[in-house]
Length: 356
Image (cartoon, rainbow, N blue to C red; front, side):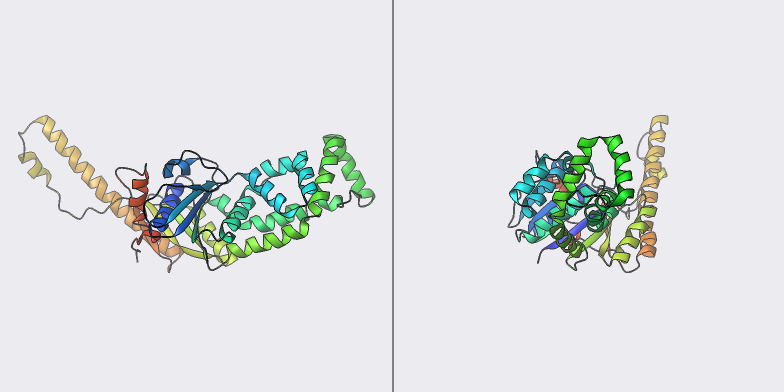
């Protein structure tokens, strides 16, 4: 059975990098892994050292017995794939040429998240992967990701226009004709013709959409799908963390724990005192200023490390039993696959230790 790991969190927490490292850790452990980003920013390719990412899984060069593929969601391509699978060829051709379909497939609110779940379902059901890692947009959009199947059913099966126009194009009564008359005057007859044609064609596929969206919704609450919430060590008290957890609990989704990123390492060693440092060199104003700066830097580093450890207290209040992984701030950064592997060692896939 394919395991799914969904990485969610606010923007700026390093979520894309962590998702890539999590996937790489699984792959280095011998698993067949795919990592999918639905963030339109093209950061995942940079993190993995791959020139181009698109809707097709691309192999990432990696040593070891496992494999890693990466892809970035293309909403229109995924819509086209869904239609091609479920419609007769003639129906699919007419939809692809329909201007309202083209607008739905590229700009409809909520369709990006639904197509992401569709693509996730494809990756899982293909049987090609042991683990699929999903890098979602910032937290509020991740909530849209959870709600995508039911929202799409509403858009395609119960929208206002679908209520007004039967699949055959026949109007429902005088009131509906009046409303559509106003819309037609604003938008034009050609637009209304495209809309009627779109809903007529989609109506032929509605049973398939409904069955598929139910399967997709089941995947999101499957015991094999786990959700990790990323938090920045310097800002663990964001209200969107609580929103995210409440959504998971309400929907019965499997919360796997917190990934706290960019944690400053604790300073346990005894540092030289200012007096000892002053005695180590000639007593000059320049050296005295340097000693003061070094001591201030050490105090700031200790204070930051203590503050980051205190993040555990807040997260424990939100989810007392949830595991927490502390991911260190890597001085050299994570600009290469080597950096991702160093970060992976602190993640669940790399055997990283859990904070209690």
